[in-house]
Amino acid sequence: MPYYVYRVGPFAQLLKLAEFDAFKPASAHAKALRAAPDQPPQTRIKIMFAGSEALAEELLCQVREAGPSGDE
Image (cartoon, rainbow, N blue to C red; front, side, top):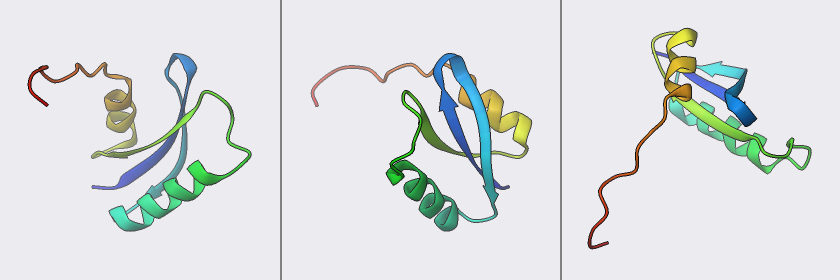
């Protein structure tokens, strides 16, 4: 399964930036994008491991609940 690199903007605006077969180059690309000074405000760079581009976008749009609180 490929690794997809997305720019996630407000209101779950998704823009696919790249696709990689391995995590290491995907991670390096995402880190370079995050460090770029021309990054649009209020956006995040995310890596998603999924079977297809549609599934990656679906996973990125899901609301994740916080884990249980307790002794940390």
